[in-house]
Length: 188
Image (cartoon, rainbow, N blue to C red):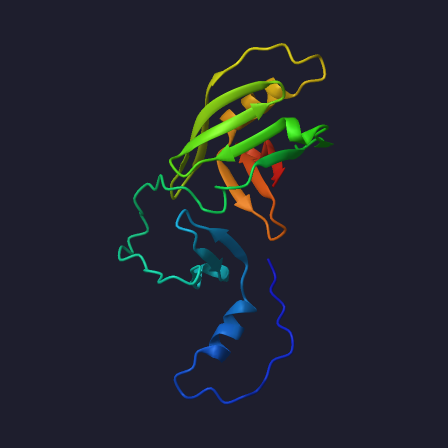
């Protein structure tokens, strides 16, 4: 990730201002992520620090600095709300656009439940977010015959393998399978 600073005013902000430090840090950001609490984390290179941003409400820094945070099953507010359509599958051997993306959707709920539309079939499931993993556990699914071109069964199989996710700056949800097996690209 690269943040390029544009023109700035050179007004004197006072001796306690952190404005220049912030600009310097923003120019160094290497990676970003979103927490389950809706915080934006901007990681500086070589473990030199993290900038933590909230949504405008008070943000509390974690008191535990041991590096081991407790598991968090709270929903990431960036996931909840939109109906996510499966747009693309990217694997080491191919990038495949998904036809009829509106037939392959995910809807994350705040309570950790998940509604899945896999072509002509519906499924319920659960998802869990913690500090080391993101898991999706598809539950019972209807068993209608959707046709030979259907990707419904593949979608369910892929969702069961997801180990992490990323939200892009463009608003895409990337569901990552382990060991670079592939990425499912979703858009609202």
